[in-house]
Length: 344
Image (cartoon, rainbow, N blue to C red; front, side, top):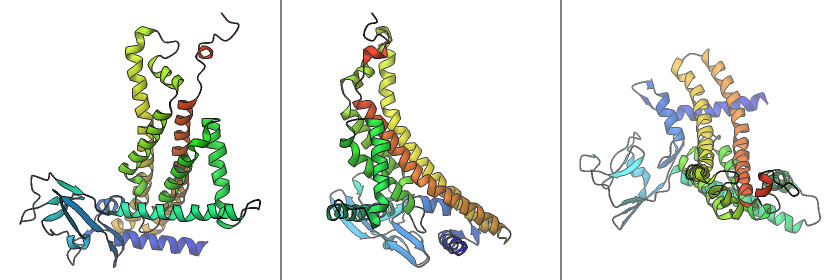
């Protein structure tokens, strides 16, 4: 186990050092951290191991496809290419001097970035694993699960029994495909992001926004008569308060998925920043005495992040199930007011 720790964190330290921008002998931790957590047009694993991704631009109807390698010179410095340049993480039109033009209208970027490539990788991994599990269920009917099936079956049952059934009720089955998909998608990408050279996919607010929006749409379109009545005619609330209560309830519909988006984005991004900051201490102080302390705290944070990776997948899935349950629940308005049968 000790050798495993040493090997793992030596690899992580080398990976962090390889991504560290150094200008004039000065190490810049902020640049290194942002380089790791931000999206990019290439996927940098270590020195000499960079995957240059395809750039796909639709410029006023004209399609331009080329490798992102053209944006970098031999010193890996950004340079213009074919009238375009990467400017603050985005591709812009530039003039002959390499300065961004004022008019960028009509330029659409469909490039395969680092996060998009990581997304394709994680989706392919999920499809391979779960098609394999589905095949095992078909071939091993009536038999005890084995191999990869035996590992994932308890997790699937946990999501079904403890998350879906407990929070949605009898109508849980229609939501199981989404809940299982979002749970394993978030968990897998959280773990992939902790690997050397991994991307910060679930720490990208655009990704968490899409996941939260899907949860919002499912909740809204699942809402029954009782759900909408609680919003537009809240039981027990005087009619004259409706102009105040209705906007508050409608805002509540939006803030729930908004909290999902921010929670996942913030927790995953913060974890990456803390681990990389701890590694940066070695290069900032440039003293051997700092290394054991820095690595020790990094080890602790790394294993804490393994827990957070699973915990955030669980929380997102649990809260989504709770929102679905609130939308499909059969509300007993009479009971809510405390006027049940026999109490007139």
